[in-house]
Image (cartoon, rainbow, N blue to C red):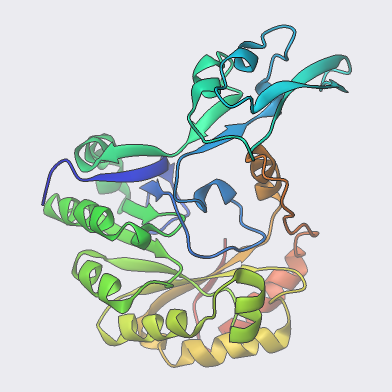
Length: 317
């Protein structure tokens, strides 16, 4: 393959202990076909590089204001005076994303890095250099590399290239996926993937489409085909209040998982949290995001025990 093949990343996280066995380096690729309203990484959803603004870093229009003069489209102007975190007042910039073309001029001018671009085109060579810095941790802990997203399989050539290079180095590989991609893509990465971290968000296809934007038949069928092709699965179920946290819904999960049980190493229950709210605000899109109280420890334990009754190995993440 072309060594200059590039992929759009939005983060590379070392010393990750939640994305597969052992200590891992997780490569996050940008872009996702799903629109989960509780997404804890909303910056991962768009396929293009996007402007973000973190108010807590901003020095304000009076103390700095360098962003005000550089936007070629007039998208950055003085905003209203507000109270700052210290209890004083500050005039933040007002950013009109309807005028913004994501050129990054304001981010380049922002020395406090309050305005920043999310999404970087990197070559496979560059990503592998970053990965190999952590190889001693993989060898010591039984860890490896996880390719995640967004939906990493929406950048299939780049994901495949990274997986192949990792396997050439003897590095354990994991693919974190929604499963909402054509089987042909999964089939290509299957020989180079030691385990799929596979999301199961909802068993009701109509509800899945209503809330997340896509039905779930392809997701469930791909899980069956991975299992039938000798692949290994870590199934990941986000527990979302008022969406999928009922006993009846978890009986449906158990019934499905029973059909592929021999391929499932573990089921991870991921309790909803509010960490995505502040990240969503940084995108400046003025769109609503799901907000609720996280599930209680008692509920998580109850759902864990419910699945364990079916002979499944279950962990609360």
